Image 1 (cartoon, helix red, strand yellow):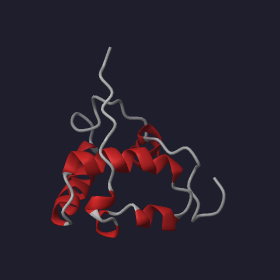
Image 2: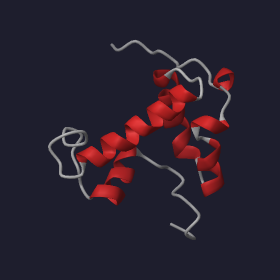
Image 3: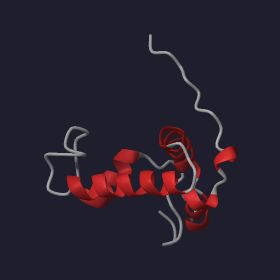
Length: 99
């Protein structure tokens, strides 16, 4: 990683968990891990903030997780906060059926 205000070009949920909590399996993410409640609280906070700002939670989270890998700087992350995005500007998620 470069300077303190830069983020890896390809951010992933597992990278976030590894940096925040240490190695955590997907099963332990929400329960079964000592810090699982912290992850749950963070996710619920994002959902509630999105709802308070007029977003449909699923649609906003899909958009957020699709855009996070491209956030390069702190300012890019700030632009993704629910209160900085008009709900009408969030595109419908691409629903690809499972095969």
